[in-house]
Image (tube, rainbow, N blue to C red):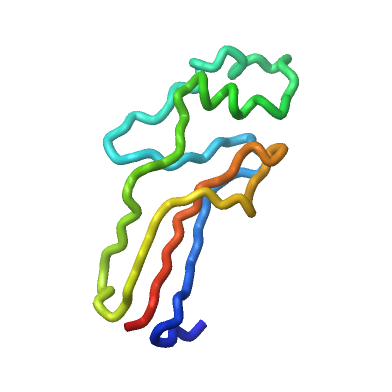
Length: 110
């Protein structure tokens, strides 16, 4: 891809597990993360998987969406850059309940 002045380019990266064997979340620096044992069904192997599992689990452990800053560093003076973490509905999985967050970098050559 060749960057041209005035053209907005976008790079998107997301880390997630479609199989839902692992939940991948972004956490802000200095936080301790989550305690999955706060969900009463977390270690219950006999509990059948249900579409509402992720909502129940998220509520029980206090899992929310990432709201921190998405920073860009380096030699960027020739570019106008915006960056953020946002939901990406095109990547939704687990009965369309889980919408991964993606790091989105938009840049324009000055």
